[in-house]
Length: 316
Image (cartoon, rainbow, N blue to C red; front, side):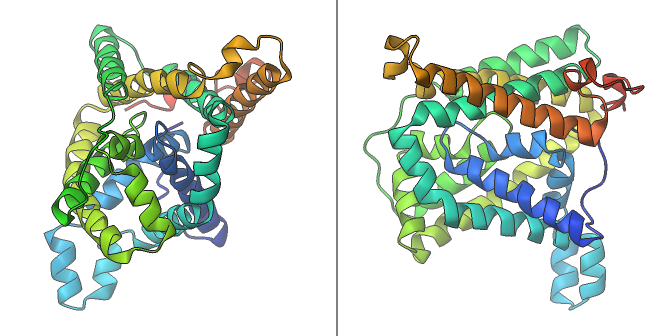
C-alpha cells in the first residue's frame, strides 16, 4: 500500500481504532512462524510511520522524559500512535497465541493459504507502484534471494534459554519482525527459542519475557535508524528490496503450508477448494484495503474506474 500518508498522529477515535486493528493484524502475523508483522505494517500503509516513530526514541526523547517535559516529549515521540499499535499487538498475542498455534499444528495449510493471498496481493499492489529501472530490479532480486535463503535455514533443535540467549534472540528476531517477508517468529524458531517463548506467554513467565523484551527494544531502536535512513535517501530502491523480501518469503508459505501436507495427495478433495478460497479471500482483502487507501490498486482498478496512477502513490 504505502500511500505515504502520515498516520503517526491519530486525531480521532476512528484513527485510533484503525491503528489498534492494524496492530492486531501485526500481532496475529507475528505469532505464526513464516509470516511477518512487518508485512502487515507494509500492507496496511503504516510502515514508514512505524519506522520513524520507533526512531524517535533517541537521546532527545530521553532528555525530555527525564526533565519531565511531557508536552515536548509527546511532540517529539508519537506516543498515541505507538500505544494504539502496541495495544493491538499485545491483544492479538494474548488472545490468539493458543488458537493460532493449534491451527498451525493441526491445519497449517489453511492458515498459510490465507497468508499467501495476503502476501501475493501485497507484492502486486506495491510492485506495480514502483518506478522500475535496472538497479531497482536488481534490488528486488537481492531481497528475494536473501529472504529465500533465510526462511530455508535449518531449525536449531537443541538450544539453551539463558537470559543472555533470550536477550540476543529477542534482538535478532525483532529486526526480522519489522522487515516485510522475514518472520521474527521464524527467526525464533531457527534459534530454538520459539516454543519456549510461546510457552512463556501462555504461562505468564514474566522474567523470561522481560529478557526477550529488552533485547527487542534495543534491537528495534537501533535497526529502525538504518531503515529510516534508507527510506529517506533511497526510497524506491528500499521498497523494491522489501518487496523482494516478500517474494522470497513465499518459500516458507509453500514448504510449511502446502509441501509435506496430505493435500498434495488429495487432488479434487473439498480441502483443495477451501485452500483456493482462502488464497482468493486473502488476495481480495488486501486489494480492497489498498484501493480504499490509495485509490490506485491495479486489481481493483480493473473493475472500478480511477484517475490515479499507481506510480503516483510511491512517487518521491
